Length: 257
Ligand SMILES: N[C@@H](CCC(=O)N[C@@H](CS)C(=O)NCC(=O)O)C(=O)O
Image 1 (cartoon, rainbow, N blue to C red):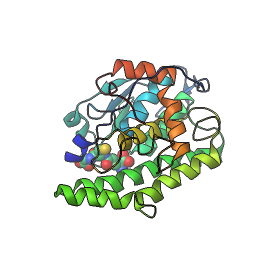
Image 2: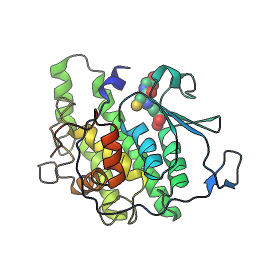
Image 3: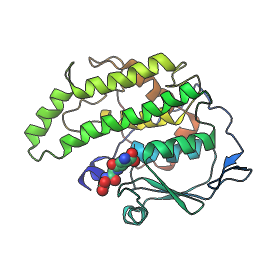
Image 4: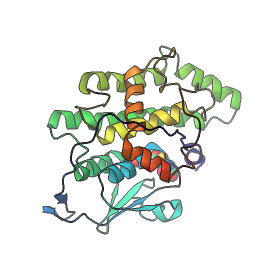
């Protein structure tokens, strides 16, 4: 639960936007197989904070215009948590858990997912890379001594540190597979939304020991310019700006870089 409380990411408001998502697929997948022209009944369960795991699912549904119930009640969600962790979603009364499975599902539902099989695999690779980064940072949250925690994080961001290695993996995937400021292909996918919130969490200055603007500032010494570009693309996307306005208590801080 401590990790959950610390997982709150903050990001800012900005306006103009460059690339639009592809048209959402209006033939919705049903939980019994086949397709339907009406969207399934969707509930997303998580806490009341914009950590990337739930936020990429929520924002994908928002951007794709798929209605859903946004249930920000941790205890309620836990009742349905197949593996004991959140987020989970309910689709026509059936539970789906695991961030990557949910990201892929909502991506297909909204059209924010690559049609090409290779790029689809690369998309999923990014989601799982975000999980690796999360696990690395989460391990430092268990360190009780504050000075030791900061030392541990300082070592993670050294040129040969574990966080540097994992973020360089995300950077490489974006460089190899994305164009026009998105991570995969040339239009917005759920992977961009995941990177946006992961980057915001790492860069907002709320994690002691990680510098403000750590991965969102393309000019600083850490240099993750492709991640920073994806962050900017999503942060300026008109539907995302609308989402941030609706949830301004999380997105009102002065933004990095
Ligand atoms: N493998 C899961 C991990 C989810 C996870 O670790 N969620 C955290 C919150 S971000 C959690 O529920 N932590 C508390 C717990 O496991 O009891 C996924 O990919 O969704």
